[in-house]
Amino acid sequence: MVRERTKNRDFQDILIIPATDVKPGLDISSQYPTPGPLEVDVGCGRGRFLQARALSHPHINFLGIDRVSLRLRKIDRRANQAGLANIRLIQGNALHVIQDILTPGSVSVFYIFYPDPWPKRRHQNHRLVSPPFIDLLHATLIESGSIHLCTDHVDYFLAIQKLFTADSRFVEIPHFLPCAEEETDFGILFRTQDRPARRCSFQKKPL
Ligand SMILES: C[S@@+](CC[C@H](N)C(=O)[O-])C[C@H]1O[C@@H](n2cnc3c(N)ncnc32)[C@H](O)[C@@H]1O
Image (cartoon, rainbow, N blue to C red; front, top):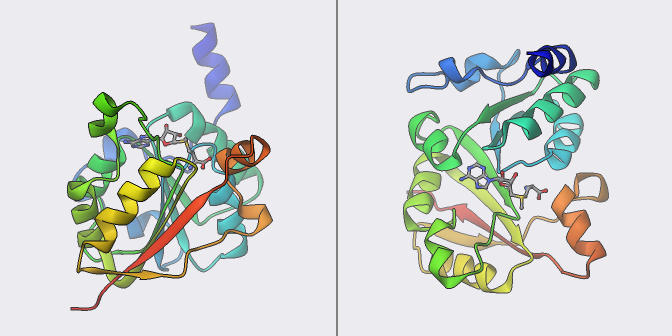
């Protein structure tokens, strides 16, 4: 009970779309004060990239998705303190959120930075970037929309590249390189551990 009160005092959950509203039919664009292109940070973690990007691109609406609610609550608090009105957050499995909530042809850009690599062979079926997930990204992207990915995990990087380059619905484009302010929390951590980021970007081909 005491913990619950502390939580409520510390966090306002202003930018987190309530779980009760996260259901098919939700119009994400109506959640932002002004209309704009929608960019989605999949597995946004502690949100360093999301906040820096939202600050420098006020005309773009950003959606952060992560399955860990405590991380989203921290982003919520910091983004509110910074007066960022162009961020919304959804807690849940990104695969289900993208499939059930995002409207086809509504997303300009997906950022997928350091998705969990599931390094053990027997766990690799848990990896987020898979053929069904790529189908969902394709369906929800606008024409010429893009996907920017990075990971420190060589095997996962090669698997991701193989999936996209074999997919004739996408074309590889020069990779997205975040500026120093946009470096993600895991990006910073891995850099200090001498684990270089491997990056690739793809664009949805027009029909
Ligand atoms: C390694 S962290 C990277 C976080 C952030 N992108 C960064 O670079 O600092 C992976 C994040 O993805 C989230 N995540 C993993 N699988 C997910 C899924 N299926 N749906 C939503 N979030 C997921 C985790 O909770 C975690 O915050």
